[in-house]
Image (tube, rainbow over all chains, first blue to last red; front, side):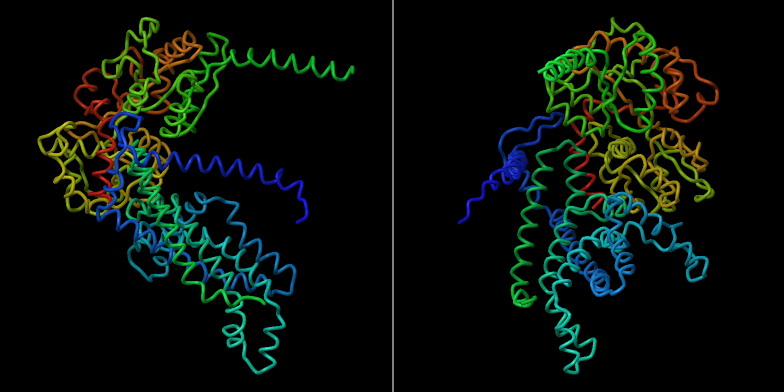
Length: 283
Length: 341
């Protein structure tokens, strides 16, 4: 093995960050095992009460709702992002490529809160959608779009889209176009070429994108908080409502630990389920 | 060699100047945005004029600043702290505050009783959480009592804060023959209100946005927010129900370990200057906490602005601040489990 004198120099800062991160996680875990003392900022004695409180049906429902919202967001983001990523990679014209890239990536610069507020303007009773439909005479009173799962998922898809586009574009860029040309030269039409060649070869990118979108969405807070309006709650909203805003830091820690454990479990399942697809991908 | 000497000299000057600069300012911890601006443009300005000492602000949310203060215990980042009355008890219970000697604050002689929260923190201005509604979106509606929120026509129109359900919990208890300590008496009544809730707002901006665009034409709303929206042209009517409106008081305290305690007392004294209290009330439409503040008739007549002892007694529902600090988590949990989800 070649000597790598700079390895320690480069690894050391990352190792320090990892140590800090582990220390923070250990603190959260320690807090989750301590009792809440009303009116005090100090946690009490060791207890499992915080975790046993999570066995209530309400929390199971919120955890399941979170998983379902994350799954739907990941799938919808994939459906919307794939054509954008494909166009980005396959466009011949540089200007068009640049325009697609800017449109896809620019939302990242705005931040989640700004993007969420823009959706409130679209979905509100006096928002763009309702105003347009009322003016066109399609409806005679505003549709209730805000404070619904549909609104939350739509906004989350918008938040997650740039990341998915970038990941899919990276995967699609590694697919040699000659494979598609070869399929077409053998008589496959565009759809068959896509389904038989392009889609399977982009499987690793799809898996990475969906997994990332799922994990990214799991920690969403501002979007469900503002657009959900307390009617659509994810785990992070519960951590805020029942933990931080109540100064019940031990329970907030327990919710966080449970959420993290669920994330690991779901991602492991996704990884296991996606194994058969990993044999595809560029050779 | 010469360069090294000059560098060392310059560094030495810098190091000498640094602690001196730190001693020339008083650090105040407060919420950001308009709250920081309010204190900066009124209290801090006069304080600096009188003492020649600059004021620096550390801003952040209630919980963030509480956490930071806890972590910095004994070596506080600020000399003074603004927070809500019940959260102030959390600071006090964790030994983060100095015990106040109000004899060092001459203007505190005119403090209303309701502003004397604890031996450690005192009120700076007051407001209420009460019923605010859009008469243009609810024609013919009237709210004489908190019980009117339970009317069938309010179904799916109401919003309340998700960060603090204490107001509606205590109101439900009062309507059911209980009070803050016996809040369980109001649980069934509050469950009956569940269909009326359309949304729960997460902060002041969210509250203002929801009522301004008509999403939730009725709210349990902070009076200052309602008055601000009215000044922006949003037609909101604020009501003080016959049972009273739930009082909220923001407070000030000196952080334990502050090295500028004398200056901190002077700042507090400026805070209670009647002219400053009147200015704060005019700007924010909150209640002054001193009896000798002179308010203009337009401000004094605003709902939720208490300018007389009778108003403090008859129009305010006061939740014991220490009880509230102890009960907040329990109330939040019950509200989230039974009403919000």
